[in-house]
Each structure stands twice: as structure tokens, then as C-alpha cells.
Image 1 (cartoon, rainbow, N blue to C red):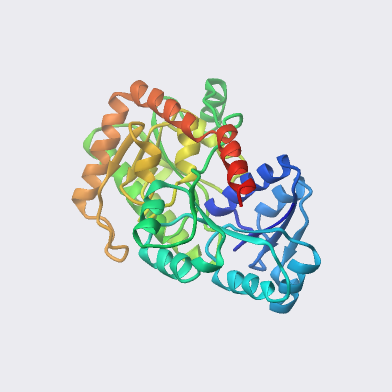
Image 2: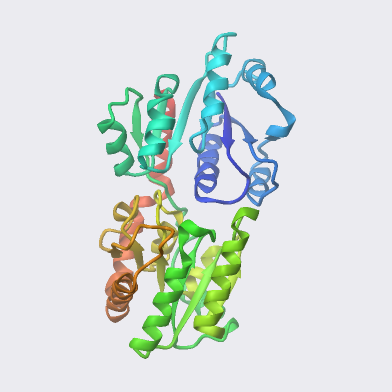
Length: 366
């Protein structure tokens, strides 16, 4: 079997990270794997695919006709779409008219009505199946009446990499001059949707109202020029509100090291799929406080708290949103051992070993 994995960008986002895990699953099944990157930006993800010895093609090396003939000439049996890509689906469908007999399947990370309508319902008859990462998406597609076969496959984490390690925790905290402070942290890219302003305001509120020594750590960066202004705004607000108690780590290929340094993961997004950052944190025994959006409720369950907040991205959070989020974080801080144990137990549901078996069953059934 020969699979072409198509990703929107080689910058390391959640969908791209999931595609990397799935590439490893394919290789373990002895399938040939190629990677097609749509954007011309060179990102960190390509390094990991090269380590797997996966050939990488950029869209700038192709065009529509070349892509169509590549599917036929290279005998591609499966096209994997790491995210909804309507143009790619259209090209694959055209390839069928010149004899291509391969399968198309798409991973869907978002349950928004726009995604369901534009990328599943409108193109469902051209797809062989959709893989959805949480139950909410599965329900939305079925409720919309789509005829495309749907398979639920949660995102997963390699628990050989993401686990609790007290020695690493002590070493990293010492490196950054952290002793007994409560370390809150955010994990992932910086953009308007992630709303890291909320995490900064929560940390400030907790420091002032609860008289706690707090540091806020931001693990991640803006991965596109369009988001750089937001990053500067976030960092400016953070230094205004928290001063030296804001630590900006930027992008790191080893987020597990900085998760060890932290205590509680704050996820303040306006929308989410099944957050890899949340799963990685829980796998390290770190509880989570998150906005009640997307797949967060399926990920966290008893390993933290969900908080309903204002969903107007232009308006931002209200004061009562900040207070509710802070109160939820304080509850975890007061009962930390309980929530930490729950996080570790919950993470076992998202382990790559079981996930790989389910993936193989889906792929061999196509």
C-alpha cells in the first residue's frame, strides 16, 4: 500500500502532529508513505518526517494536473487529508476519471457547522471515510445526515515521552529560578483563538486576590506571520500584568520538559478539537482548567475543570469569566494530588499503543 499524507503546512500544529503519529502507524504497517505540504513555508514538522525517511513534496513542485497524474503514476492507494482540503478532494476525484482507484479519507478536528457543511456534507460523496477525533464531531456529522462512513479515533500521546518525572521537574524549575511558586502554563501556538490574554488575567487575579506566588509559563509561539501581532500584544500584556513572573519559552521540540516544570495547564481557547496539549499535560500528571469548547469535555472529564466563558472573540472575557476560571484553578491547587492522579488515569485512554491498533483496523477496512 502507498499513502500520500497531505498537510496544510509544515508548521507544528495539532493536526500536523496527529498526522506525524499516523505516519508512524502507517510505517509500522509496512506501508510506503509520502508527505505533501501545501504551504511553501519550511516548518519544524518536516524534520520529524525526514527522520522517518519519508519523502517530502511541496505543492510548489506540482500543479493540479501534475498532482492528478502523480496519484496514477505513483500508484497511490490512499490519500490522507490531515485537515479539510476541498481542492485536494476535487483533484483526487478528477484523478478517478483517468483510472485512479485509490481511497480518500479525511481527519476532521472541528465540529463547527461551517466545517461540517463545507468539507463533509458538500464533498462527502467523494470521500471513502472521515476519521473524527472526538464524539462531538461524530454526532454532528451523523445528525447532519451525511452518508460518508465515520470512524471515531481519538488523538493520542506517546506516554513513553510524556510522563511525570520529579527529577526533571526539579532540574528545570531550578534552571528558571522557581522554588515554591504555583506554575500555571499554556501550551500551543499563540494566536487570537487561543486567547492567552485570558490566562494572563487569571494569573494576575489569583496573585492579587488569593495572595499566591504565581508564575505563568507560555510554551509555544506564533507559527505564521499573520499571528505575530497577536504574539506581541500577548507578551506586552503579560509583562504589564505579571512582570518577571511571565516566562515565554517560545517554540520547543521538547514540550514535555516544560510541562514537568508546570503545575496546572490553562487552556483558554475559543475553539478546540481534541487538544494535543491537554492530552500531553494529563499524560504528565498535570490537571487542566479549560474553556468548555470543542472536544475539551471528552478529553478532561474528571482530570480538571471546564469553564464556560464569553465566546465573542472580538469582545474578550468579562470579569466574571476571569473569576470563574480562577476559582476553578484554585480548587485544583487546593486538591492537587487528587486531580493529578485523575489526570494520569484519564491520559491512559489516549495512549498511542491502543490508538495504533484502532487506526490499523480502520485503514485495512477501507
